Length: 84
Length: 319
Image: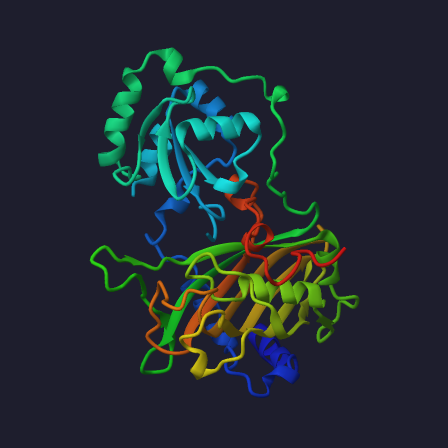
């Protein structure tokens, strides 16, 4: 029933831009699959499993307290944890 | 890459070079040369242990770094922090997510249809002709909405079929920043040419309201095959479908799932030779979004076009 309501809602949602649209509609039945497909796949971005800090002072404090070296990952424009 | 090894033996720090912090933090980064597109291992005192191309995030490269660190006297391993109260504030403070607003993480990747017409991921490479090419990885970026903007998404009537026309500021920010193909890197936001986004109530319960999101956006330049090898010719179209849930008791969204399929074309800025070769023209891409509910550093990084290349205008619109 939820899928039916989801689908019917979509029939009357967009009007003006559908004309000459280059991209066809997305079937609601494919929604979950597409959501998983676009997100990073298993093993694709292992750096996401690292517990990054983004504050230098906090990192130095933790390095001192835990007696560990710091590993810096820098990007020239944008956080290396996002889009660069 | 061995994330477990890094987590166990190192304090990992990720920095945008333009936002390295206050004067003490900046001085420390300059001392260890933490800047640019780079990896550096250093002690808290500022002793550089390793840097450059040979440094990688695995035990083979980091093991010797760790051994060298352990040989250092305690004073060099740890050092001493200057009083942060005496530091000059950052020249560029890192923006924080809007209080009471929404933080949404977007993903972007290349897509293609198979022979049956089903969508799948398309594997593409940076500098494909080179022996040391590498696969284009799914990119991610953030979308921030203010508290007022978040409230505007809640329908006035909690009734199936009720609709909300999403405010232009929200839908244009969405489409121009996380609705474009940003796989190639260092790409400007694209000015929206036309956008639509609506929310329709599909279910109402005492606990919450479920909404379906439909949208379509045209951004940047219009498609023109003759412009294929011209600079400043980027453009795209994207269709989105989403499912949102508003918790009526908490008065907050607890789901913001969106998928988008699009076509993109053209070249960024003056770069007419793409870093990632398009096998079809235009090429296909997909986006996905999810609500961020955590508070870890990776959840609080600012949207790229809030800080860089925000050519579609001020991120939160004109004041």
